[in-house]
Amino acid sequence: MTVAEPEVVEFDNGLRLVHIHQRGSGAGIFGISVRAGSADELPGEEGLAHFVEHTLFKGTARRSSWHIINRMEAVGGELNAFTSKEETVIYSVFPSGNAPRAIELIADLTINSRFPDKELDKEREVVIDEINSYRDNPSEAIFDDFEVYALSPAPTAHNILGTPAGVRKLTSADCREFLRRNYRSENIVAFYSGPQTLCHIAQQVSRYFDALPRGAKECVVSENLRYDVALFNRTEIMRIHQTHAILGCGGPGLLDIRRHAMALLANIVGGPGMNSLLNIELRERRGLVYSVEASTAFFADGGLLTVYFGCDRHDLDECRRLCVDVFRSIADGNFTERRLELAKKQYLGQLAIAFENKENRIMDAARAVLFRGALSSYNHIRDEIKGVTAEHLAALALPMCEPSSLVFTYK
Image (cartoon, rainbow, N blue to C red; front, side):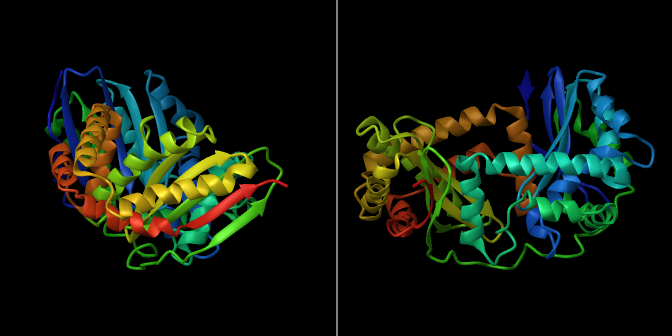
């Protein structure tokens, strides 16, 4: 199977298509990436972007929910979606030859969804159950709460899922209005990866998405509002059996070239490898934690660097000290060029493997076009990573020497 580099086509209505030709592949993926997420909700609409993503599948002008869920599954495919702070993705994976079916269906959902009240009432309870399931899992809920404290008052601060009380107030009219404001031709990037040619897919996309409302999003909430992460240290007492902690600071965003250095730093200190610095210090040498990880969150106007760990309550202070010591050592310039080169090699190897996942690759390409207006190739990212210096890492590590923190613990 031959995999080509991504290509981009822009249609007369401003919609863009990212295409990767996988000659000989037995399956394809088609979807749309919409620059609309929880950060695009107006006051009182918290949870609406995610609720819309759920209820898009509940009926259009020509299809019932039953016909929607069976349209792709009948041929062995699947239909799915997810929502983030600044993006909603709706996509289908299917056996080759079914691209027109997927394109027409997703266009119908995007343009003609009606959000019937009866179906919304049922799905409302599903979403509330999802919210409650996150609250029952402190290792996941702590990330949402940290972002609320760290990012306020920016629109990226509030929880993507909203609250049970807020979700109960959302109406069919709210959903249609959110779709009208945000699901517009210049605010969407379509994507396809599979065996069919660019010409064939472009014809189908042009045909079925021509009725999209034209133009950019009408109400810009999430852009052009920069934020600074204020220092905070909060502890919440809960009925749990383990202490959960996040340490974090602000950092570069999606449009900042330093994002590559911050991603590398996160991989060095708490990436998936067992040789990450924090895994060695907290788990391998001292047995203080079962898991410790560093992660990044990149938004249009800024980002976050965080470290999460779970430990016994009595070990919290030592774990916190060890985390800070790791970052202080890097900030002080103690990360040698030899270690840096090895870290780059490891990270680039992980990226090379990730690029082999066709779903990740096409969605990442669509996201790059959606937010930055241009594709990012593996070679480009490789060159950026290779250009990262110890001084770059030191500058990004410095704020983590006095991080903000959120702790869930028990008496």
